[in-house]
Length: 443
Image (tube, rainbow, N blue to C red; front, side):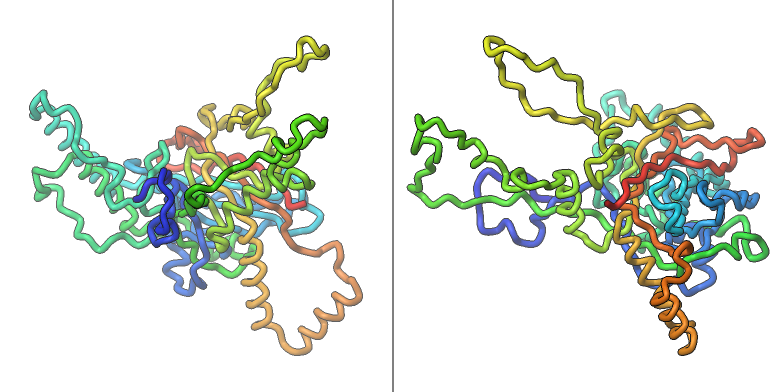
């Protein structure tokens, strides 16, 4: 990967490969889910549709109910997101209420984390770890660390501290034969072997333990199901300006140094002279590189704030500052305030009391995708008479109280840092835990 910083300007900056890859995974829509097998496979990430439940016991239907109106909400996304080298299957479910009366209120978007112990993969992982420990004992004291980076295998991005595998969202695995445990080459790095096996984890079909065919979940409102595929985020390098040889750079302030006029405004960015939200401007510029993104995923990463509102102040608090001097003699220059990301205001996990960390966020384009998908489906189902009736109701402004549509700018999901697995019965083989959601609304 080319360096993000290049001292010498060149004409090759716009060539393919000059973009910088980030640690963020982007979820993008990838067509309608048509097969019943994929619909029931919890390892198939999706936009809309009905959930494929991991826990063996059906989660309570109240999990999908809006905390404002108590009506069942539509599933916005289901994300298959196992943690590297964990024996647990893992999925994230996010519901949202589209009733207009519930917009801009806490509780109209809810997220749940599901875990399920995978016996088959746990057995493979135990054998790998045992072999690793045995080889470490037999290895020479001179060899203190593997020569390869275990996180770089088959992966094109730098994972977060949780060590995510390269098959988040249930992407197809590379067509590489998985080596048998007994016949694994001795030259391969042990850590490398464990990571390769963990990457192969997604090859195990995670069929839903619970069928919702005969349950309230099947009758819940839903959007048409779409595949949610993943791709790495790439950003263009910073623009560079080629200065002609022999050119002279002049400061306009030198033209009239003693005329008493304040020309400092001339050197500020253009947007500072307007009422522009710098946070929103940064958001739109970042997202515009991949406009079709519906979800951003970076476990233990930093969310991309939508605007400078109360949520932004909560996650990026203003640091304490010394009071400004009030006398001319004590005048001093105050440097610009730099905000730092902090999750101190996020409530801890109610199960294990560990801190919560950022995991993913829903993007505005998701609303467009859901709206388009349901519009297409409704258009196909409606008769000519029904279409005329819909138009008449709109013209007469009927059903105003039942108007549907989501208005958020982004929804940020914060999950347990320890990824704890504790169910209501005190077991540790599966769990269904609600996580914390922060919503920035679209003004």
